[in-house]
Image (cartoon, rainbow, N blue to C red; front, top):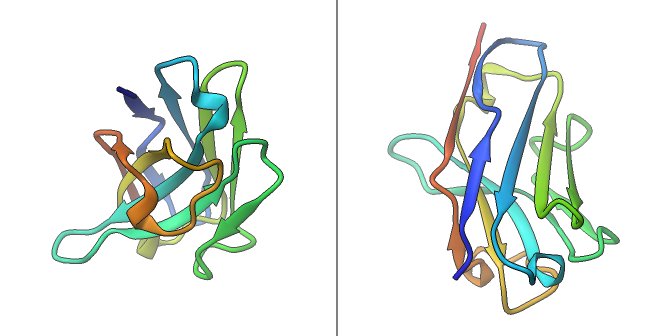
Amino acid sequence: QVQLVESGGGLVQAGGSLRLSCAASGRAFGTYGMGWFRQVPGKDRDIVATISWNSAGTTYNDSVKGRFTISRDNTKNTVYLQMNSLKPEDTAVYYCAAASTTGWAIDPRDFNYWGQGTQVTVSS
């Protein structure tokens, strides 16, 4: 069982920055593919970014490319999402997810553990 706890969400003005963190339990974190997703009420959960077990591979949703950066520290069992140049349309609940069966997942169906989510609100 893997537990994921997100932190770092909040209210920020457009153009500002936030860094989300996701702390994971367990000794096998360094073998998991990790990802960040976001969801707004009434819409499907969208993938934001993914990162491979060794940080060699990353993917980004086109809407966040050049503004968001995913990273991880396997010594701390933590994955991060640095969000810069935030826009009101980035407002959502952000979820951290782990794919325990693969070292890098880009298909949302491969993620089998989820955090509880953290709210990010960007005001105009």
